[in-house]
Length: 277
Image (cartoon, rainbow, N blue to C red; front, top):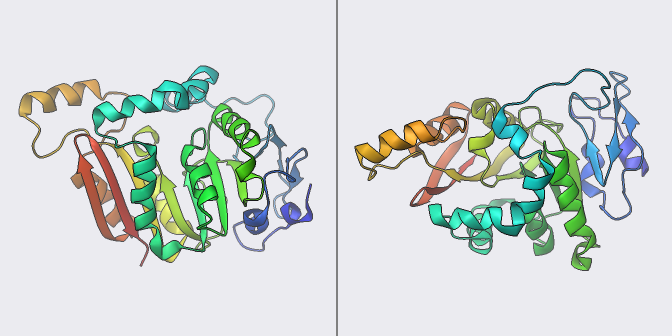
């Protein structure tokens, strides 16, 4: 375990040096203990587990169905093998174009640190790392199996061997980073799966530095051009998922302290961005 992962910050964040840890040498075979709270954090399968429940033996916390779905080994395996491709039917332009669009929004964060929250199998995390645009990339997800899939993809791609890419298990509503320490946050097709989007966006706002950029994509519940019949159907069919309208997303970002909101919409697809003032 590199010494950098044992560094304990005096503030809220315990892991500021994690940014510069390369995924190849830092296999995270052992955990580490926080010197402040004495809690031990575990590591295995190529990722570091920084959740509150890390290391618990008896207590089991049940998550909402939309969260548990993506912890499934089968769904994690299928995500880049057919599941994600189906998003095109709802207007998603595809990973390559979505990455290009996000990179335009992330221009102010060039050379900085980016966290890909709810990264899934690391589809965009790997693209961010390969781009060479950022000094460090963290692929962060709550699903253990998604992170295992991400690690498997990384091991098979030699072009990632020299990138500053680390895998972290954490809750988007409790990000393990110091306030104002992150230059950019990406959340691809994720917001509708979060148990509390307001808590998550508030946390994202907290960790972003002044001028930091948040970019997200999700499925819209409906748009201004959607007929009332279709709206009624989507209200009923969206039960279990937190599909929002564009107005709700803008309101959410603004209420959490973000500014300069803008978005691009195509059918049910939306890419939105906002900055921390």
